[in-house]
Image 1 (tube, rainbow, N blue to C red):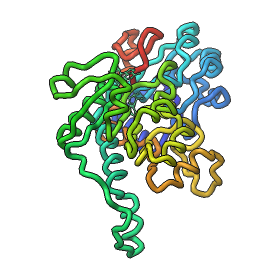
Image 2: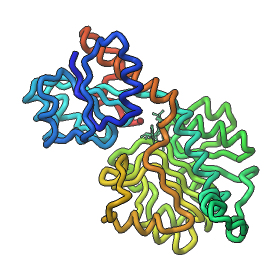
Image 3: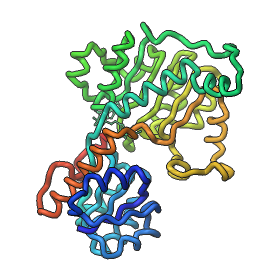
Image 4: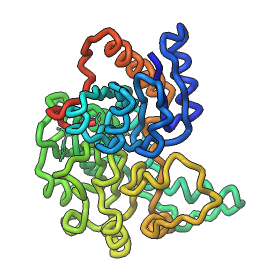
Length: 336
Ligand code: NAD
């Protein structure tokens, strides 16, 4: 099977080549992102392999169909970037990696929380400059605080487990409570209750049409002053313009974003010599109590190995005419 691999980074190549030792798959790597414009690079391939910000709109899928490509291998869990109705209509199978390493994302969310709270980002810069002043670096104890987890699937549960280890009271909102979270001592509450009671809020639910801007003006109005908000899930869960106001009036005491609603134009590239055109991003990143990471929460050795392993198993299953359960259909709720 020939696979055209889009948005390829060095770490992708290393891990996919390591899993493809028998050269079962002929993988051609492209740095460029997949879109209707770049789809012709996949000429002669049997499948394309895509990531979170690749464009799998109806137009791109039509172009893949024209080239007789019948398989899209998503090397991620989320599929909000795929027009599933178009894929089904065109007979294109879409497979994904539903779970690779929940701890990779959970541990990153906690790293962001700790960095924000203890001002590690500021201390790092100061001490490199031989500035050992502690002014402005005061944090709070996480022990005993209430942490709100939105979405208690695989990653939310892994996060709740760590927060419990810190000695937090962990409350959660999820339309489908998870017995493992209840067994851990997590208390389920409504979303308004979670917003009103949490000192720290961490998002671990999928992005759907219904929960776009779940955290926006009205959610901020229900939070206490000084709330810390962490988003390692999907950018559009948070209204980033509303965050600017919430930071200005002190509702948000800190904001950590690994995902951002307009990340497609920014993330995964070195733009250090460019003038960033996104004014919301510029305003947020200028705040001392806002930190960004560029969609790196998944980036651990264990997760990359698991992503490569599952993606190639998905390709293998397809080539043998089998279904292995990782196919995404219109019926599957996007809970990645
Ligand atoms: P999962 O399917 O195991 O769990 C998702 C949970 O969210 C489910 O329990 C579901 O009931 C719940 N949910 C659905 N809609 C909700 C809503 N409106 N409010 C509250 N809860 C809701 O998924 P997971 O593997 O834990 O992944 C969670 C999220 O993490 C995904 O959205 C994914 O996009 C994101 N993610 C980010 C990265 C990264 O690198 N930043 C990597 C992997 C996954």
